[in-house]
Figure (cartoon, rainbow, N blue to C red):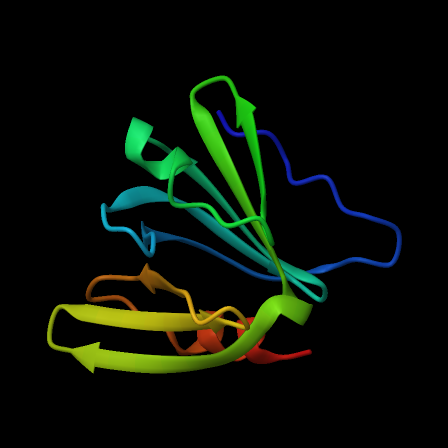
Length: 119
């Protein structure tokens, strides 16, 4: 069972959703997205390829069977939404040009994209 996200003083959760994460270097991971007023946090079951995909602007922590990805909102350059029949994606572009894809499958992605983009 994943641990509850530890919030910093003044930080609050705006949205949470179970979905897939596609790192910039490829792969597909299942886990929980939590969007706060200051960061995008993703907790995933990971494989070894995840470790090499994370950039220095993010924090990656090992914790039991789960990997944690934190993207500060200050590092987000933009968010686009891509919708196909069985794939609803929020594509998060960072200031360094890397793209992080959160895929909700056939479920909605609009609320996640909206809260990720909110500064």
